Length: 119
Image (cartoon, rainbow, N blue to C red; front, side, top):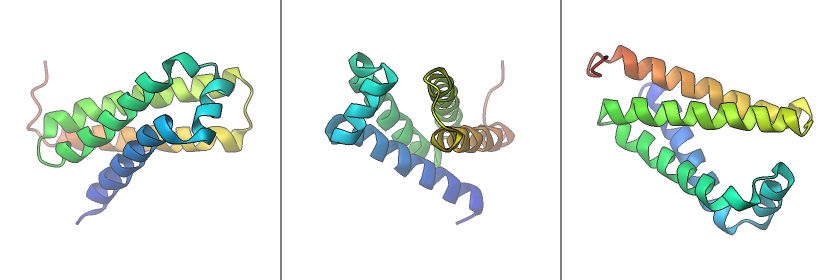
């Protein structure tokens, strides 16, 4: 398994776990309240879960990899914005920045695969 595949699997597993935890973890539920997103918690958790699954499927279907990684990038941009807005410490913002960078790496890899039809 090459390094980019490891990055995709790690990111996919992380997002599946975040998605599931958005539904069951008391800590995550309280974090959504702190972020001001308690009414959107289930939708965001579902999106995280689907993005994680999409990354796994994307190992075989490149277009799904690109779409999922773009979705991941959008979610992480929103996460960074929200954490800055609520004045979180930089140490609290760094994981979102790291996943944003991983998303950029994944989408770059997907676009380079040449199987993606560019409009």
